Image 1 (cartoon, rainbow, N blue to C red):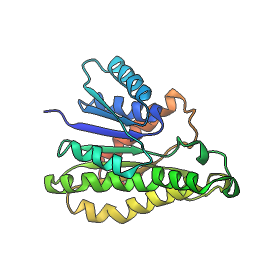
Image 2: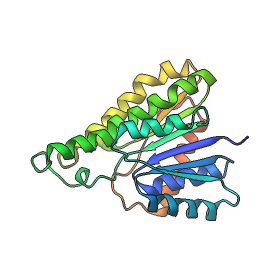
Image 3: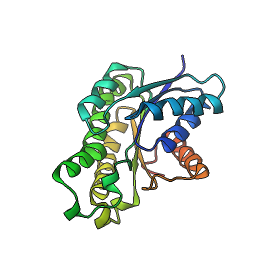
Image 4: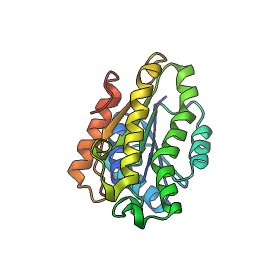
Length: 214
């Protein structure tokens, strides 16, 4: 039976490139996004790149941690690799000062970049611990170490993901579960060659479970 990669992301290009990389290794793919159009486009790209690939899609509000966790729980013990890319996607994260952001916008950004990511990790951990295997691959950015006042919530989100990985790496390794993070670009216009390189990095993080980040 083939293994399953479930990828959650606000940047379709990076999620699809990572899915293609894993599909080439024989993985079944589950694409989760907040846009049915992105999901359908992702299926076309993956099946066009990898003949015979099995691809499922699901649509949830990525800023709603309850929806995210509920979806993952539906897959039970089927998720071998969880990939969460929430490093960009919300317009408010890309060019807004603190004074320009509303409380609702700040809350949505933090839910998308922190709370929903943690909810996804919490949802898959019990199954992975019982099985004694699994990888959790998360995206962070250079803003975690070099925060930007114009991208404050994204900087906070990146720092939270790095903290999550650093805190959980050793405890999860004791149960055979690997967690790691990768710095990714914060802009939406990522070139194809760059997405392929990032996908290779995610694969290396999965296949070399001694590494926290690439």
